[in-house]
Amino acid sequence: MTGTRRAPAGAALLPTVVVVGLLVLVWAAATGPVRMLHDSGRRYLFVPPPTPSETAEVTPGSSAREITKGVQQQVDLSWLGNVIATALLLAVCVLVFLVLRWGWLHRWRAPERPQEVDFDVLPDRLVEAMRADADAQVLAVDHGSPRNAIVACWLRLQEVATEAGLPPGPAETSTEFVVRALHTLDLDPRAIGSLAALYREARFSEHELGETARDDARSALAQLRDDLRAPGTVG
Image (cartoon, rainbow, N blue to C red; front, side):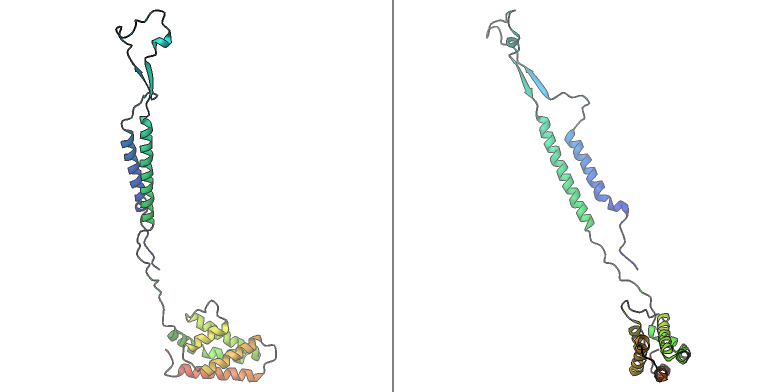
């Protein structure tokens, strides 16, 4: 049986490799040059004190508040914009990865080729097997009690059909299987039905079977043998 060829493992990882490469490029572009030492983000802007012409000269007794009142503290929030931009780019990369992965998993695949089964023409093999086993079937009917003889003959027919390459169905009984096998050979349906009825009676009934049942089974076998030897028989 031939199935769909699976893609190599390297090809299956292609979307992941592409997305990882995009992530690296985006990260490098967003972060810029890496600085080993950086400040805390706070900036102090020193405003020169007013000139003597604008304000009075600082006296030695001035307080610290008066001296530093011109110093203004400013907080640099430019890093927050970088974080938001990086997060958006990462989200886009994840979305691209998911789309590529979905497309890869749902890519078109060639339909599976039908199973190739080697088989022989079963009726031909079955005809030859039945012809070769005809004498053994008669011997099975002639030996033992009528009940056991008929059951043994039927089971022999079942064994011959199976060995010829005709498997029984999963839900078929022994009776159904042998009847189906014999019908494929275009044999006399009356002889098949008579022998099947004798088998069911011998297999499942509790009353005694006389020699009449054995004779009927022998007659049905003889009819089947004649049909197998006829020129128009399948095979």
